[in-house]
Length: 125
Length: 416
Image (cartoon, rainbow over all chains, first blue to last red; front, side, top):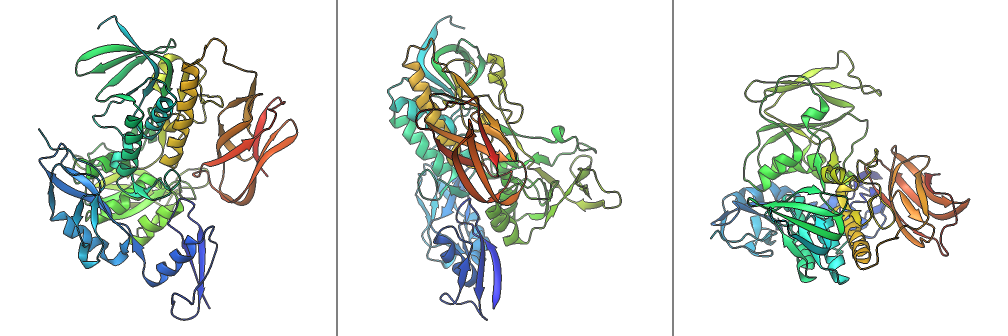
């Protein structure tokens, strides 16, 4: 039996989880304890099999009242692609105005996950 | 300056989450509300907090700071709040009169109620008294956040972070994503002060070392920071001789605490609490000056913007009620709220005998496990909550019901 301790990152509670499994972790062979809510179980299983994170960063904006806007992946993406995704976004620039929810990239780093704007930027007059 | 004084039911100073939520609540209750903010855009510090994790309590979903702010801006504007941005409040009197300055012109405003929602600022190097030279490259985590996320300025390449507050942790990850090297986070205390989830997703994900019981003892460099001397500290917070070593770096971020920004409150004569550095308030969030309310980080430092906004909404309702009433005698017999064993502070600092439903916000003194927070008055227990983990960095909130009111000398919160 392998016991792996981890902190759930889904909410500020930060539950201290313990995941127990034999040999290689598989989605239906993991016992999770320490979670205050059911999301903790899904988190622990995903963390052991395919850890994901939301990327939140910024992208340049041309002709805006600010030089850049903030963006995020619409859902969490595999943790291993975060840096590559950031590199892609560094090459882009948007034209003001931009609005919350505008799509910056329909599928960042071939994940199938869109990157969307999180802050509106008006056009410079 | 014109001698004309404009009147409003409720005047709010500060357009962050607390002020915006206060405005939406007060205007929703029918008050004529003016909200003043010194920035060009509303939302306060949330606009530079581009990471996600906001809104789980307020909206049931995880949002970035700018998205969370935009929702409260929309709520306030939809409710009819009149906003004055790019405007600095330079004076506040106990008669609830403000002097405002905007683009070279000055004007005066008087509110039947005032809501203080000015937020907080970061502790700086000067407050820590770190010896050494004074090179460029030593800045607060929040300043680095503004430069990175708002101004598109690169703050440095080799980063050391002093203090394990959440802004420092968030910036550690942010700067890794921006291509910098983060050499480590130093924390004077034997435990981290940021949220556990930020230790995981901001430090452990990137193998950034967290050095507990460590701090910076000297800063080196002439024009630009060249390095810091780091030492281990004992439990009495003294550096342990022989443990010092140097780390070469070009940037030192400070994430060592926040201070409520109460200069205007002081000018008006509001009494401050020496523990929270915020106003002393009653159950309505009213300060020691009639009709002046306080909420959010200017009242006490919150861990979550969701709670600051919730507190703002409560203060907004109270301020609208005060503005709409004949305000002569609004103070019922006071029941002081005491911080008992294991509790550092409780907000509000007083309630009244007529109080039937209360929300108490408090912090514990030391980290521990399996304790129970207990609220007592006059020998009776009014509420209790089991706490699997207690931590000074985690604010605890308790709803307290006292049907029939409180017939007691004081109300106390303690840990059992």
